[in-house]
Length: 161
Image 1: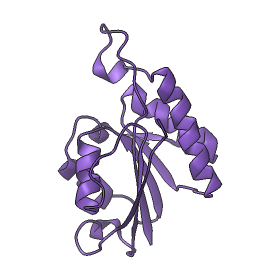
Image 2: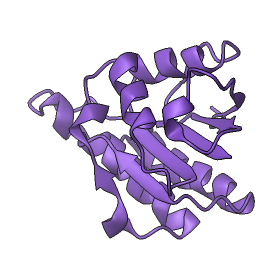
Image 3: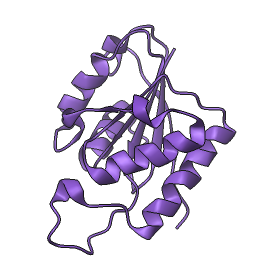
């Protein structure tokens, strides 16, 4: 069994127009929502083998805040440029190339590509708002099978507005 969590970054701030897109921080709401969602995961005893984040500050900060709540060491978070400004096809290729030893993986990134990939893996998911977590369970031993042979069991969790 493989479990993939697609996590869209929490609400970001657009207060400083001089910042590049990669350098935009979380808004106050994002700083509240990310730990709240991390606590929800912790209550379910979610223990990922790997966290991979976009290099964008808002995504990495979301990953760090959630990691704190689930007991995952911040320094073990892998930053991957493929999670920033890519496509659903690139993301699916990244998933399919994951190490077989990792059974539970969290990816932190952005829309529209996260919604597109989520919808491709489960037609039940049409939108991923900020800080949403889509969980996909695949009855397979190899990540390379994801999205091809094995339909996903999917759930979507999001913060309350």
